[in-house]
Length: 463
Image (cartoon, rainbow, N blue to C red; front, side, top):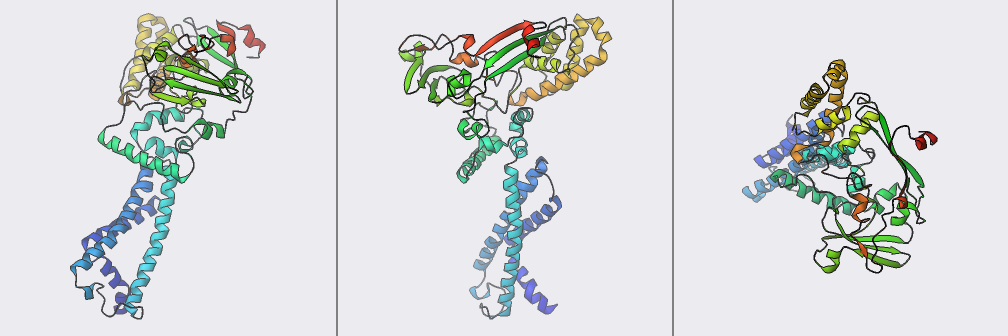
């Protein structure tokens, strides 16, 4: 044991002959042991993932940094000729020096293996949807909307960061700023939308959706139920079109077309001026106040997909639309008298974190007051409906972040928000002709029927 101690124990004693290095080694060894025990934990494991993929690498590399710092401090306190704690000259012919170098090389190899694995897993975890959505409670509303959206299989980083080392570095620096705001409570409630750092549609949407494709016409329908429980339908044929200048897409993003606009606010809710360029010819439309200089634009942008499809991955429901859909899908009662009105009344309340119990009680109270006979005959159905409405409320209302119905409007269309009418209204006039941008309904869609029972057009279409 004497020779073994000289060859291996002495180098360890040298490395740990001060408190700073000992603390560093403690962090390194603790991180390695915990990493071994947590190996196999999923990137979807919530806060356990933060521990494994963020906290442990930080402890590991921080500990490695403390070891040489401690050694340097120890050397300054000792006489120069005793700084190795090993007798003899500091040269390769000295077996003690060689054993020390072997020890350092072996430790370095282990550190490279463990550190490399931790670094790889950390990068992988920090690009996961789970990290983006659950590592910070502030993102809980956006994560909820994302999970229930049509792009739930797309990675957050594909739209919010993009490819390349430069984008990754900028994202991490921005994340550091956001972490500071969270720790100090300086973040906005609700989170401002749309985010200015979001990549343009040409780098995100168009990776899957080609602007050169002609989408033709598409049937849009909405099913509702009146106070008696009878089903009524509204249906339109949307003229989507495409690159050749036809339909909605063609008029806004066709070949040789581009539109630039000026907005009165960062939310892009009020448009002050629009410049339309087609085949090299431009026409400008502006409000009277903007043209006279009474109001000034604070935001300018070249229009792309995200100006209409402004919530493609994080769409929050509109209460009446959501209730209609759940009723049409059979998840809420269809034939129960006054149910739609009762459901919307229950969803309007402010319940904080008590919606799970308050909404079912509110629904029962409505029927107790207005339809006591229906309450007695449909007790079980109303209990089930109350739970479904509470779940709908929980997916869309977040009091801590000041998010309620309508906080994040969807600009696609013009029923839930001004949407298309931000530009297609009477306010913006052409500087050359004095005419407003078209408001002709037939330019964008053909109405098949509005709130009709047994709509003949839908029956002919097989619907």
